[in-house]
Image (cartoon, rainbow, N blue to C red; front, side, top):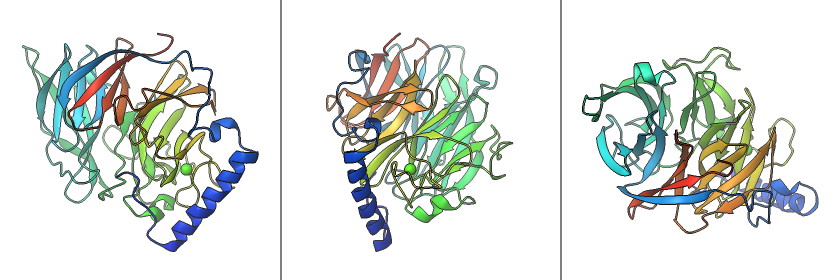
Length: 368
Ligand SMILES: [Ca+2]
């Protein structure tokens, strides 16, 4: 499970207990509504302006983890445990191929996908996956035959050494508007790694397309931000700000606004306690039973994040650097939701995570 107790010692447990108590008090007396209302959202500005479900695609998927789109609207999907890359055209899924080198286990396996910003010319598909001894990123050409059939070329490992474990493997990858590859990692059950700027666990990394530390990184290494527990979603707003979703421990799932060099607290603090030296989350879901936010997308000033344990789609109105009151949709109607991605036709596709079997929901975002 995503929310296995992370702290193995009493130090962590006591800190969480203290954090819970402080947050409970703060929510009663001081913090703005947005930081406290995740468990019982009231009517918000987007309440009557939410996404509209257009159709459910029974694609017979098995634990899909990530979805990206080619320019022609073809969906490319990873399946965590089967190690398969699948494509969806005309509402039907086809196996493209097995991604080499994947060793599934627990929450690990074939995880995040990203397309090269120059995909039209280089046709490179990037994948973050769990291997024998680590989590790593490979890229491979996504070849297309004259008849339209897709296939995978020979993979090239561009980055390795991200710690793996049965839980907290991170796995989301996405190219930013600056052309660099951002990577969400997890602490892999070693919370202390998150505060070590020279360790790869519990971070957002920023890499060149070839897998080197991107120029301008705050610490002269691959690390872009730190103090994360298990980053699961990455998206940029229309002004180029990076937002990230993250699993909390048994409390305090987070939506964060990411700054280069920022310390997001784990394992010292979670949520938004206002402690000096740590950046507060913009949205805190006090109960992970309501959230466990995974894939993240931002459309027309609204952040959409899929909830696994919470079995719903959360929407959060963004206004500059401020996040408003989260509002839930699809609650418990479709089970666990894993990833969300904007298609070229302006629809939002959501992947389920139920293994019975899994499907995609096609939504019309508000304002489209
Ligand atoms: Ca945090």
